[in-house]
Length: 88
Image (cartoon, rainbow, N blue to C red):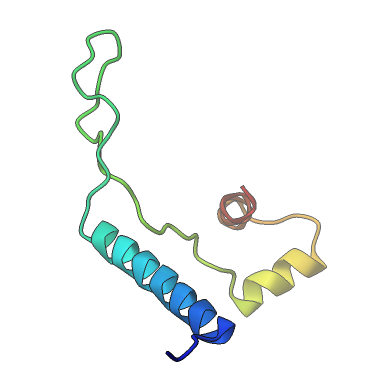
């Protein structure tokens, strides 16, 4: 009878673990996130409850805006709002 080496056993365990991980992550892709509770009377539920934003990024500064921020002490209100949105 042929002996199975430790390398073969280790490779089999790692491949099996990878396949299980792949199966679990692929199974979760189609699922939707559901809010914890939408029927409680004590907490009012807005009509946007359950809608989630996947990726929300502020717009970045242009070269001219960066120059204005770097050279002057006073900035316009629009530029100040943009700076606040990026830094918070």
